[in-house]
Image 1 (spheres, rainbow, N blue to C red):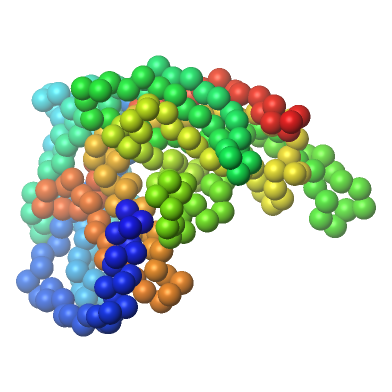
Image 2 (image 1 turned 60 degrees about the horizontal axis):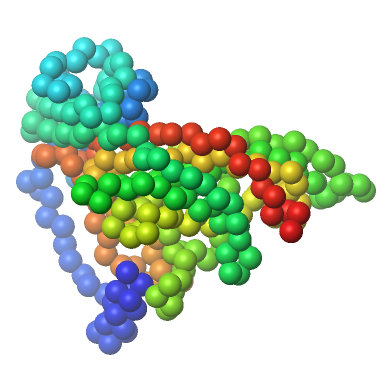
Length: 314
């Protein structure tokens, strides 16, 4: 991917970077936007809005006119609790689905075409083991070793949180020791910079429910091992040097293909290595909603045991 960026940058430098064009939206009709991340064994929420062309945003009516829908699990109609946010968003809530369930949504209103989307809730993350160690450049690494099925295409993700003690110095005569719980970790600085080295650490990371989610697919890691490099930080700032007696917990995700592709497209859109040079690369948004936009997707989660960080003692 990095080599692709370098090639595009060279092409832009040779040919120029301004491409004027006009968007003809006069015949574009409103469409439904579906947003739902469905977690196995958890209550389900599906939000539906109406999209209008950007050029008509100031004058277009975004009210959902006579909305109606069908939600099925394994071909059987599912009952939902409905609520409206004003007249512009329909929220559907229903009981949990299980791994392996196929979810199908059909939605339309008086001024939108029929939109359809489906996904299958994936199985749990496979058998795994965790090891906390250091990389060659002394960064903290959580090694995730797992048993991937070589006969299937699978998509994974991980989120890490930590508990421990944090030393506060700012504005204090003596350091204050504060206990912190459930803090998110941070990726290494520069992980998303344009890298020339083929083996440079450049993971796919997206924000998910306020945490940094590391995302990968099984074909990216042929040895069934994922290295998650991270740093500590608390709400008071600071670095690893001001953190003591820490322990980490890893939440492991198995993603539906739709969820992986949607998150990857968001990553590709927001992480632009040309921004500091005043350039912008094309980016496309993935959707699995036919005649609509957004994503109906699924995932499952497994929470690891807490792992004590003994690297402070080295």
